[in-house]
Image (cartoon, rainbow, N blue to C red; front, side):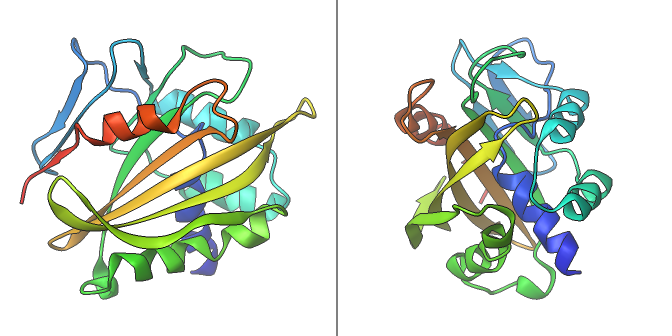
Length: 205
């Protein structure tokens, strides 16, 4: 069970875990989940196959955990990146998963953040919470928000200083996990861009 929780955490935060949406416009809509989001004109939706290939390229301290992650990771509801792949730097991204609350129903969103954040400390040596879990709203719903810094290594030996942002948004028996990744120095994309995308999120109440 502990490994499965760690899988959920890491696939939420990594900039390279992506799902494609082959739409003709910039808005992704899932009627079943009651969710929609609009990407900027210049951003890209990505495929589940690209998601899996990117997961395989990640370098983690715990090789056993990496194998578990690849086995149990599931495609997100939707995900987007700023630049077409392959991209020779950290590609700013945003992705959305939806998960059943189960025995977490009624838990404060900040409490859920604390549960999913704890395993990251063992995955990244320089993991640092830069914004502690705090209350916010997404699409008018009560939510929790936090921000992390860490270094993401790739097989060619390079390491990217990464900032991940996380929003937990409970709705009924489920909760949405909205994760975004940018460079810490914002050279390839800004967190203001992420905020603008978040403003387009609509979740049915």
